[in-house]
Length: 410
View (tube, rainbow, N blue to C red):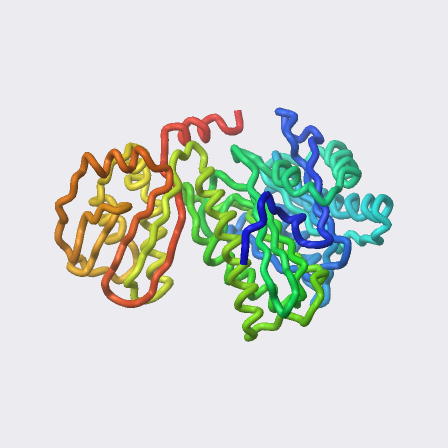
């Protein structure tokens, strides 16, 4: 597997994308994206577990429901979540699919049906979409579709993000070169399962719907379900994965070596995008990786990592470049996992702070300077009880996060 420089969802064969500004955002920035595949795609998806869900989730789930459902396009807007907008919000989401299907059929001679379009929204909750602007945005984006449009599409789904998020990988499967590429957005209200995030993935691999769903579920659990910025779970979280089979070759089936290789490449891609989201957390100055080992099970390892990652005291200490390992130990101890203090070991970067229940002497001023000089920090927690491990990514917590979210809608 190798990373493709400046790769995105349009890196795989047959995928086109575009982003445009239609006026949903008062800033005039891009706010409408369309992704299109020349060939029909099998599709997989994961959605938020929040009991309050955006309108697009109901519509996209319905379009994915038939066992043999095929997908040809994704249409997404930012700046407006189309959530808690009642039946009118549902109808607006359906209308987005209808407009995209009609425009793609007319402009791309693609014979796209509304049920072959997936829809997504992100932004402020409780506001109806300005459908006149959305319609013009879809028409503009379809006109602009290009094989180099992945970055523009990534820009168009941003809300509080400071930078677009996109990546792609290249690998060989069953004697054929295969690509997997994606775009994502997210910076706040980030916590499983999943986060205030959207992610659209395309691949030219020959993989069926069931196998693609299994691979996506595995990848999402180890990426987007393993990041947190603030412990809040959004109403709009969505990951779509589309496979158009243009690479050719034999079908990738579950249980095969090719499936494992594909699944692991997809996981690597999702983790890269997930880390971009965590690093871009609102007001963040550091990306923090929390590695938990020695747990009795993966679920317990993840529980420990997430408890540490969501601790305001840990996050603020790291913002202040304070190697306060006691806050980490306290977070580990209040997690629901099995923990024995006398077995516990903690490291911050290269500095071992606590081993087998005893504090370790280290140069705190050197650790402070190391934290100050680095914007990527690794925390290692060894529970010393078993063989299971998990990794979670988060960011520090600054006063800028509080200021930004206090002023977000006004």
